[in-house]
Image (cartoon, rainbow, N blue to C red; front, side, top):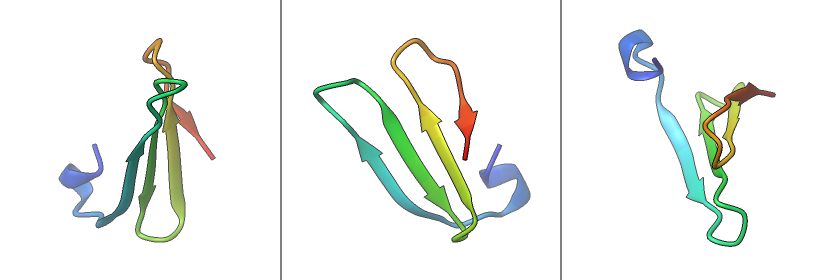
Length: 42
């Protein structure tokens, strides 16, 4: 979705302990994707 709107992904992190993925895009969009696949916008 972020690439379709030409948003820069500035930080991508995978937490090995919890299995969560953290994405910071364009400084104002924060996304957390837990290992169950549900997506949370912060």
